Amino acid sequence: MLVLSDLERRCVITVLADRSKESLDAYLATWSEQTRAAVEEVALDLWQPYHLAVAALLPIARISADRFHVMKNLNDQVTAARRQIQRAAPESEKAQLKGCRWLLVKNEENLTEAEQAKLVLLSEVSPALKQLHSLKEEFRSIFETAPSRSTAAVELAKWIEQAEQSGLKGLAKFVGTLRNWWDVILNYFHNHLTSGFVEGMNNKLKVIKRSGFGYRNFEHFRLRVLMECGGSSSAH
Image: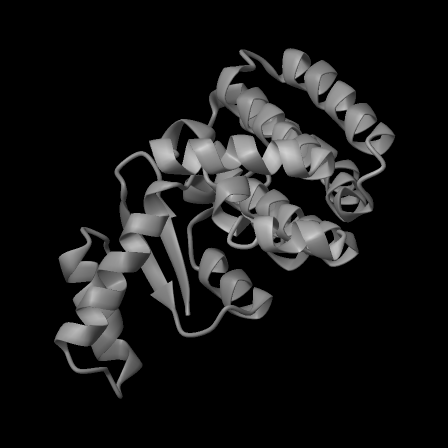
C-alpha cells in the first residue's frame, strides 16, 4: 500500500491500494487545480517514479529528499562497507570485530557505555571501521546542524571529497546517490521538512492491522486507518 500524509497536521490523507506511480497519478489527478497548486513542499524517498508524479501533478511544490530515507541509504552502505572490511580482516581480528553492526549505524550519542567502550576497542582494532564510523557521523551532523541550503552544499561537497579519499569502496554507491539526487537532497535544508513521524504512523498502522486480525477487504482497512489516524478520504 501507499500512505500519503499531511506533514503539518501529522495525519494520514489517504491510503492507496498499491505503491505504483499510476495509482499516485490517478489519486492526485482527483484534486482540484487549486488544491494541487497550494501544495508548497513534498518529502519523498529516492524512488524516481514518485518524483515524476509529484513534479507533473503538483507543479508548484518543492520536492525534498526525506532525511530518514537518505540516512537509511547511508546506513545500508555503511553496513555493506563493514562487511567488506570484516571479510578482508586477518583471522586474528575477526573475532574482535563480531557484533559491531549496530555500533556503526546507531547514533553515537545513543550508544550505551558498554557500546561506547566496544566502539573504542573496534576503532583500535580496525582503523578502516573507525574511519567509516567517523564519516557516517560527520554526514549525520551536516543534516542536524547545517543552517541553510548553501552551507549544506559546501559541507556535503567536502564530505564527498573525504569519502572518496578514504579509499572505502563501500561508500562509492552512496556518493553516487548523493550526486544523482543532489538538488532534492539539498532542498531538505530549506525548511528541514521530514516525514520522520511517518515511521511512528507506520507502526500504528501495523497495530490496526493486528487488532483486526488482518483485513481481507482493503476498503475496510483504509477507512479504519483514516478514522484512527485523523485523515480524510476527501482531502481535496
